[in-house]
Image 1 (cartoon, rainbow, N blue to C red):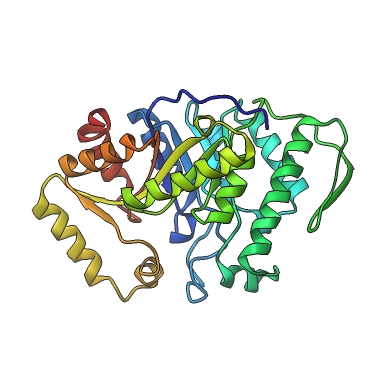
Image 2: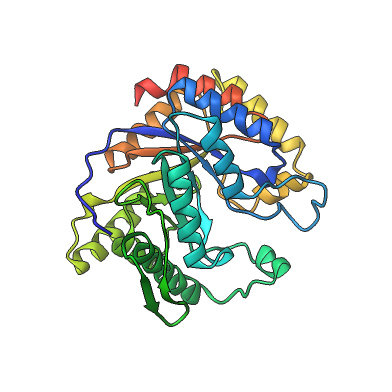
Length: 320
């Protein structure tokens, strides 16, 4: 996709998970606060609902939210973390992404992954094949996107997807448009080595795990004759942050007391939080940076975003 070596500064993004129940006004408030505090990007998850039980919980659609944020922000980079390749025909997705890159003035990061949330697939009538098939589809979807963004008439015939003289005009403002692939498995990293400008490892994987996965990515790059330094490395962390250890413990106790909510049951199936004071979090982030990480996506508990992103900007951001 026209890759070149990356000399990226360290920067920070904020993750929003619309399926938690956000209104758009709440999302816009987080985005504008992040922009004012020096964050580099805002990322939006691509989900269709929280759980089958959360009938009355808001879940705004990812690219609709990103398009509104393109209007309501001026500097932040915008992206899905990550879009499920299965939810949109890849040629249509390429068209959506190119259009949004124009609307945002060239501020889009194209975040994409193989997809994983089987209850959403089943509810919306999408086939949910095994991971090998979904990762093969991801590979083909990225090839189609590249051709749609560069060729006047894009054609591709693959095992899963085909297009014939498809038009995509206007082309993206950015050339190349940055491709961020999310996922930690060996087969996904093989796709990342082939297509990605950046990889994201989420959520809250420890430094030792990141070091191991970067070794796998570098081996795939060498096999393809690609310089691994062309690929940015991003880590997503779900963080409980407070100025004191007592404050951290109190916040964890609040979460424990709400463990019977659908929100907490949903989170219980994911990696545990990073719970830290500013000193502890800065030390942890420096450990990731020593491995080659140059971007952090920070995810806070629903309702705690504004307090947390302000505390992080004030007490942590300049110390990493």
